[in-house]
Length: 453
Ligand code: NAD
Ligand code: UGA
Image (cartoon, protein in one colour):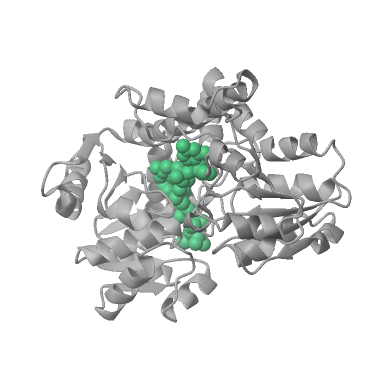
């Protein structure tokens, strides 16, 4: 099928590449020329395992192309995926300006019937706004071209995006019940047929329920994390091990094991903004979502937990102290630094007068860019950051190591070398990578999250 993807970021590029891999003819559009140039020069603008190979293979086969040409992109696809960003507005609601601009672009150039798919995460009711924007543009140029707006939210995780897209747990598609909606449903059915070969993974529903499902999923996952983080903080006080508790409750199939890892808070581009946007939607209807208010507040506090533990351990005196941080990205296998907990910890340490050596396997360049923005009001603090060349290099003469991201490369370090390089063997582990008993036997002072047994 002929597919256009509007917005070639994480979701757009993965969607485009994977649909091309399945044999579709894909046109990827972005307004950011630098991204398109990277892609046309054989690179990819993000770190995502497996993506580069798929993009290269399909470009070579002529099944995917990248462009900034809006008119050509609208002409190409019978199905037009909108996969642009929906960042938080000042009041926390999802800012729809990119989504609506994309819709208007389609309306300005479309001729025949188009299925317009909202792939971006958008609040309930957005499909109606997208339809209105399209209709307005068509009316302005007296066009009778027809369309149907479909909601098809994306559930992929960064770092496992290709795998998640190619082997989805479920595909959620919301269509309306008009004749155009029926036409759109059958086109979406054909497009997603390869995913449903062994068993049906698609959940068909109305448009609003599909839009809502996306927020409900992210809010549920964020809730589980904040719940476990709150219990972990209590475990620290009562002398229980949150990891043992996690196993103990996760084995109940009604609870399950996933997304119960306590840590130094959730980050990324999605949980923080989607929890906020859902709260904001509720407020628009005069409702106050008490659970989600708490989820957000617990997470904000949890991002400070490593800084607080370090301050407490060093009697609030960090001037002249030096720390190592392992892991800067908001999670492993990505270079994404959006809402990463490392940024909160680094700010706390630097503003308290410490110096810091940081290391991340892939996000060093992105981290430099982001830290320059974070400390624009105190550029002298940037001089207190050293960008290390390896995990071990980061440790030299540090008063303690703080672990923020659970990269595989950090899981089995050479502890003898680690101890020799640190000024004193102290670890603050924001992702509970190590067994406290083993750390004790190795003579390492170990501070996990909820592990003070
Ligand atoms: P992103 O910022 O990586 O990419 C968005 C892209 O859209 C950018 O390259 C931008 O230049 C481009 N763009 C903006 N306006 C445009 C326009 N009018 N025409 C063409 N291109 C335009 O964003 P993302 O992380 O891919 O997220 C996109 C959406 O998908 C968001 O709503 C997000 O919540 C949702 N989502 C993201 C993930 C994820 O893991 N990143 C997962 C599921 C859902
Ligand atoms: C999340 C969802 O998992 C995806 O299904 C969704 O599509 C996506 O948001 C989105 O809407 O954009 P992502 O943000 O890429 O995906 O990453 P996650 O693996 O969910 O991790 C998010 C954050 O939660 C990370 O900071 C991670 O460290 C933290 N986390 C995760 C925990 O603290 N504990 C856990 O048990 C799991």
